Amino acid sequence: MDELSAIKCRYDYINRFLNEKARRLFLASEAKTIGWGGIEKVSRATGVSSDTISKGCKELEDEPEIIESGKIRKQGGGRKKLVDTDATLLSDLDNLIEPTTRGDPESPLRWTCKSTRKLARELKNMGHNISHMRVADILHSQGYSLQSNQKVIEGDNNPDRNGQFILINNKTKLFIKYGQPVISVDTKKKELVGNFRNGGREYHLKGNPLKVLVHDFKIKGLGKVNPYGIYDISRNEGWVNVGTDHDTSAFAVESIRQWWNTMG
Image (cartoon, rainbow, N blue to C red; front, top):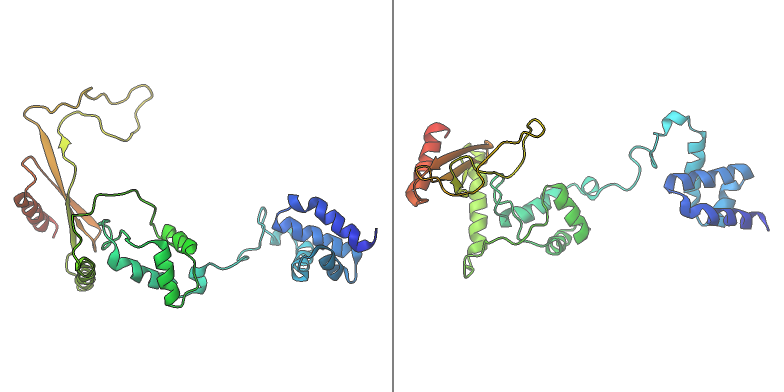
């Protein structure tokens, strides 16, 4: 067996057990064992780039502390993220999403109506080289996630619906820019008043949980309350008004009035 065949044979036996770093170092050790011309010979025998083998040789010569323990690549190694190499990608994606999002009170209209494929297609039209999978990764890193169906359809869709969302979004930005309040208002689920079970857990001594009523029957004289929430988007502050009357427009207006007099 000639020298190149022997190298290929050893490489083929062990290659499937090696990660990227171990493969570099193994091939580098083969090249250094051969001596002069070893990098080129190992590259021909295995099909691995001579640049990769050269990097492995340099790593073998480096002091041990230079290579971080457990790291396959040096700090900063590997392909750069798209958001690092494409300066306008995030801002363009955000501009595509923001006018057509809704539902989350913590940012103006923040629930996207567009699919990742549509977003990728529009980004490509703007000059970005990106796939729908990369769009999904970026959305996930920005706090978006796949969500189940939600009751948001209110009968026939008005042809001006999209224009209304864009108008509201632009007005929201304008008011925030000039320091004017922009609020999100919503009535929450009605809650029984009394010592009833709630979801979630809290710390207690072992074997001593908080004891609550077995049945969720309304207590006469206490009844239910209607929490009405007002969220100030720009200041990231919330206010909850609790009432025992019916959930009416008068209650909504009074809740906003109470928020204005107390916090607004």
